[in-house]
Length: 378
Ligand SMILES: C[S@@+](CC[C@H](N)C(=O)[O-])C[C@H]1O[C@@H](n2cnc3c(N)ncnc32)[C@H](O)[C@@H]1O
Image (cartoon, rainbow, N blue to C red; front, top):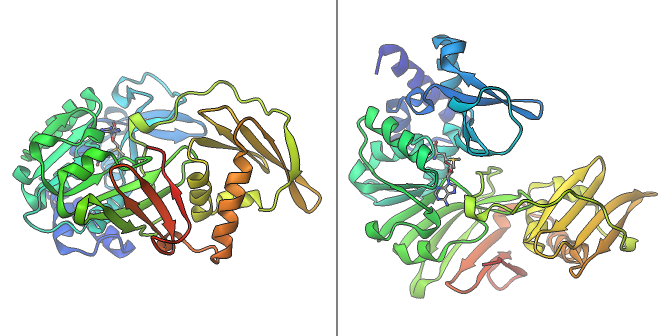
């Protein structure tokens, strides 16, 4: 590390500490020691309107590149499977890998409650930056990281070698965990899941933890740490952080045909569709209709069930809203009932929610495990 990059690492750690995301001196030491520019390689994407524009180190120059690398920003490195290094021009699409903003990486690790000497399985190696942070604290012999995309896994391995980290790196589906390294003290996912994979329950030791974001096809998200208790039951409460990670690839929604709003049963809505703009509100809606995706157009909300094609869409009507529902599922009925349950509890933030996970049943509950609950699709 040169004096310049050492100073950039220190300044980044200082900024993250000031933001409140970094409180543990051991993680601070890791941020100060790991060069992020190594993990970005030479190419990232920057959003410009609806397009992802490649930014190449060779074109922007060293000073600007280091400014980008040491900003507390997520840098997308792959869009729909196309690495930034291979992009000849701007493209439309969805990010499929990124270097997560460092404050979110350390916040996730702090939530996980990892201690010196722990054996950790990370799911979603990406660039390898978070893997290096883990290695700095725990030693490579205690870190296993799984990446789905073979090309990304290879680049991450090169980045990690360049900073003298030697974790166990696995290319494959992290939703299967990595049995050979089990039992782990902690499993940490830097991609989101729609439900907790059974393998994670089997591969974490009794009393060990699983830290992940629970997300879905309405893009609502909640960060949670689950602790594995007696008889294979994991429980925990959501932290309330308003953060998200990209969904694990096997949990992504399938592509859908072009959206056409269909006529259906019409009635007045009993809830404001604007509740989808509330972090916890959209989370509740997603729990109630877990296979539906959410689209907005101006002041309309459209829900489309990916499995059945059922639809619900709202439109303003006088001082309220009308909802149109079609298909076998009454999506708005489901969502409305859940939102009204949440409102009756005082519209709390996500810290009021928790989760109980067994091999067969996973439930997100409001208030207490025996309170109102929603089962996740497995
Ligand atoms: C937000 S990025 C990870 C950021 C990374 N930890 C870093 O610090 O650069 C999410 C990563 O998860 C990977 N991923 C998605 N689904 C996965 C799966 N089922 N198993 C393993 N990795 C997965 C993606 O390919 C992507 O590289």
